[in-house]
Length: 310
Length: 106
Image (tube, chains in turn red, cyan):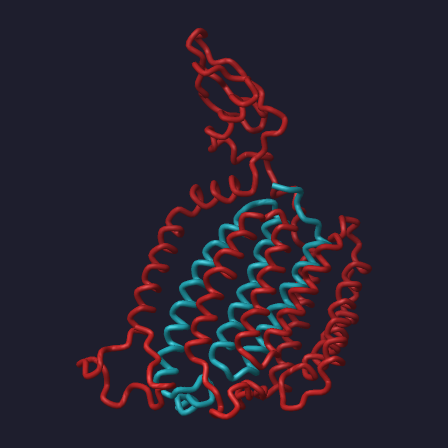
């Protein structure tokens, strides 16, 4: 069993560390807060690693490096007073998360995450941050705005959040002991290749197990064979798969996506298009004097005269 | 697919996921800049994504990853709409302070 008292103590230490880290004017306790928070995360991981009766393999050293980078980047993201740096720290979190996905054997999702998040969403955020940036006064363009430099209700937020974390971890670590063993859910390995006849065929042709004139009749992943129909024979003959032929991550995700959830995929596409339309409608700036614009609606103070986004 | 995840490793990934989610929650509650508040919701999405992929690896199927594709879609749509709203709000008040809209609480 996981030693839950250590986990709860780590939650308390992490909460105190977060309180020291949250932004306020003249914050001198940041280093102590960082050490406390990192120590709390390390203690929780140690408690997990020691208290397990499962003799399964421990996560390797890259997991620890990547998760500490992710947690540190996340803390820096919510404590940095300048929005642009916060967005850049979030990119760091995304990269570390992608590394964790590679550790979990989900390399396709790791690349998709980097492309979609770090490449598309975060760049949009950076554009909006730069479009909507304001200087507190003209003499000191680098001075911090009051609402960026001061945290709102830091004690209440931290207490609520870490109570939630303690409750979550308590429920999870009691609950995961009753999860079914993973082997029960893992049926035939490479079963997805039954639907990917083209991949089997090209692998067989590359290994010279099939001639040019032959075609594949069917594929049997359980026996790792394929039935090959050739013009000279009346019945299909058996061809064994090459040893290196496996369904890789993209194959598994693709088959699962298109065979099990095709309607959801279409709905996701529709949602994306509607969101694009909605964003264009919301952010559009009507021409001056247009009928849809309210008379007092726009731009109490236009920064430097022009902030057109149209 | 690689070998299924052990229960011990799953617990580690769930810990990281929970920690990231809570950090995002604290950021959402304490920061007053509208853009940073939306960034913190993206951080909470990341935490959910880690849990999703870890459970998928534990059960040895791809459904966690397929679900993450939909999460990415919703996150992209949400980011576009939220940022459009932020731009519209900024045009009205010329500030990103969430407190400046507090009369909306009714």
